[in-house]
Structure formats: structure tokens, C-alpha cells
Image (tube, rainbow, N blue to C red; front, side):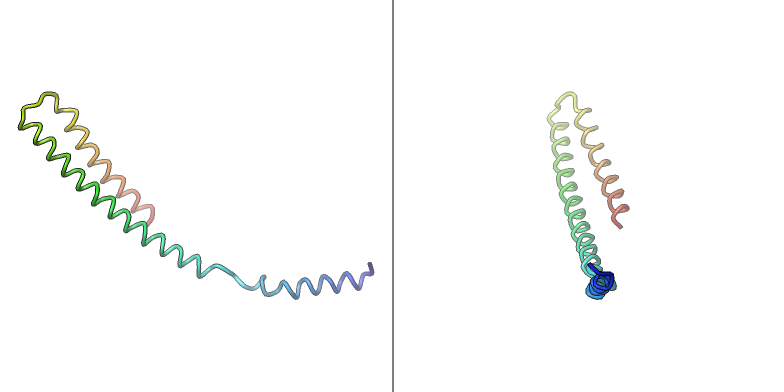
Length: 100
């Protein structure tokens, strides 16, 4: 192969590839996807907090009912209920801090 033919092929390759070198495909899609992920994440985190609040309320009512019935050994249930509420609150705060 001659040198001039090789140069022509290199020139054509650079000429045909120039559009893809100057363009930045996917930037708009990346920003749109980032906005969608943030929107869905915050909706799901709010839903998780609402479900956790409902479950915490039912757990509190269950503990109250067991206390009224005079059941023994309620300390473990009370500690589990209280610590799960604290865990849910701290976890949601940390995750919102990470994704905000």
C-alpha cells in the first residue's frame, strides 16, 4: 500500500469521525434521567416513611393493648418498637442527605 493511499484513508477516517468527536451524545438524557431518579427516590422515600409511621402506630397500639391485658415481659417489645422507630427516622435522614 502506498503512503498516499494510507494518508487518504486516515484523512477520510478523521473526516467521517469528526461529527462524533465534536458531539456529546447523551448529556441531555443524563440530566433527564438524574431528575427522574431524584423525583422517584423522594416519592418512594416519603411512601416508605408513611408506611413506617402506620406500622409504628399499629405497633404502639399492640403494645398498649398488651399492657392493658397485663401481659408479662413487655420490655423486649417496647424496646424493639422504640428502636425501630429511631432506626427508620435516622435512615431516612441519612438517605435524603445522600441523594439531595
